[in-house]
View 1: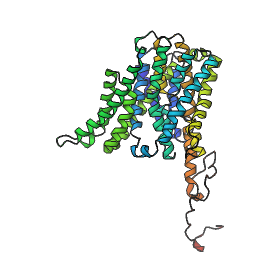
View 2: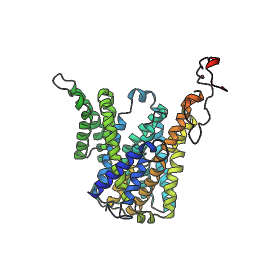
View 3: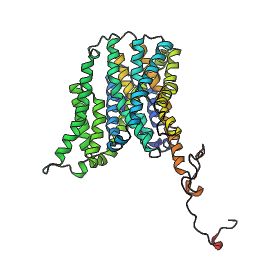
Length: 432
């Protein structure tokens, strides 16, 4: 109950400060992360949570599922058919290079064996849709960039999972859950995709029957029912829930746009609640002892994974595309690590591999650094693109200057100045 009280207090503070957070580098996500750390055993001792606690895995799992389901609804198949090459580059080239880069750094700077190093690379290579949504949800950001980040962060979790399980098995697990063969892993991914496609198609077909149909006030609950049932079925059958969530959201938005519109406000709120709860719980794991257990080489890997490996590999994968320099830099920077990596890191910890504790510590610290860096930079980045939209608009219509200025126009003169109405000499203000 203490955890519920802490969550309620943190939620109240976050809501009261959300207006300020939308205009500054203050992050509501960071508030929950810091709040969880403050009430943990490492500080005030109000909440007692360990990495082995079931609540950690459950909240991270639910948050990731909820966010992937709602993010999937933002995927447009018509746009994806015409713009599939950029997400394919990020997933097919950028992600493997990021995986390899983190593994090499971990092996040489931390001293872990190659199998464990590749395992850590697999855990930290996917980007997180929870924090990417901070950019994806902002209309100031160009649509093609939002689509790239949305599809990449929604799909790469499922792509990384087989490698995580394979390297856990290769590292010598003691838990039966990690002994899955490659065939079993492939089956789980296939089942997740099948369930994610089939569930919204079946429900959409039922809604169209003459004797059935959702009452308008209950229509927002239809996608919620699909998501809840899908989550349960996936865990009962061991199907991959993350691939199922993303594909179900995308298919539902395509076959039933009215359901998407009805559910969107409720879905976004539920996803935010799940995210905040998982952040609070994860923050409780970030004790001083956890940071003290990480070696200097581990800190170097954590920083370089965020500021060097991800940016360099994605910039390489996007070379020669139609993105301009600013869009490429934004996509390269915004590769946050989050709940997918938390879930996979917990699998590593619970598998009982020889260096499991050391691997989890490195993973947890990297995620914490990423949350701090990326959740505090979304507003300034979005405003940079907002500046681009204002180029050519007369000064008196642009509103107040931001503290860092408006920036330089990318293509000066592409938007004509609005004509000014003729002024009557007598109506001019004195000195005008």
